[in-house]
Amino acid sequence: MSPHETPGTAGNDPQREPAQGNVQGGVPERREVTVRRAPKYVPFLILGGLLGVAVAAIIAYALPGDPSFDRSSVFGFFMVLCAAGGVIVGAATALVLDRRSVRRAEHAVVESAPDADDEGRSGNLR
Image 1: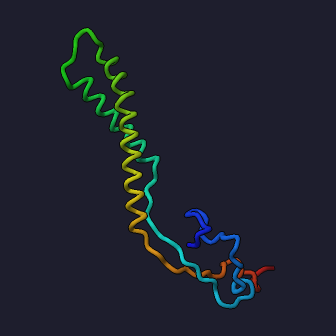
Image 2: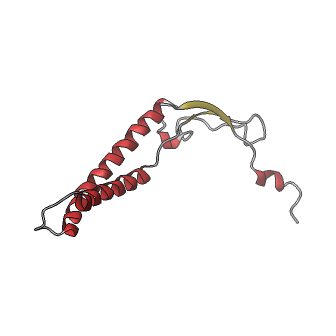
Image 3: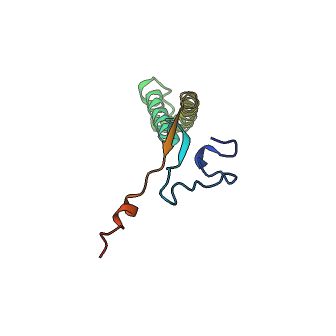
């Protein structure tokens, strides 16, 4: 990856000249890419929030409490706190796994292949 590219724009370097190999059927273009398995953040956030709600339910219903407070109001209070904490823990976990995936990234060389549409147009159209 050149210094001008960001991770989402591999191969879109404005200072790089386009390869002429693909245009005239010559040598295919070769490009070096970085391959890594990055986590999706939304599932981690949702799972953290759900675990926080579960912890709030355990706090409100499984532990002995003050009889002057209704258990459902205690659950609502702790649900807000624990769900927010769970989302933060889920986000931190996703960030740690993302950093680990950057360290374990592998480099590969790919080359372009002709499209299937280009081969089918040669004589099969009526």
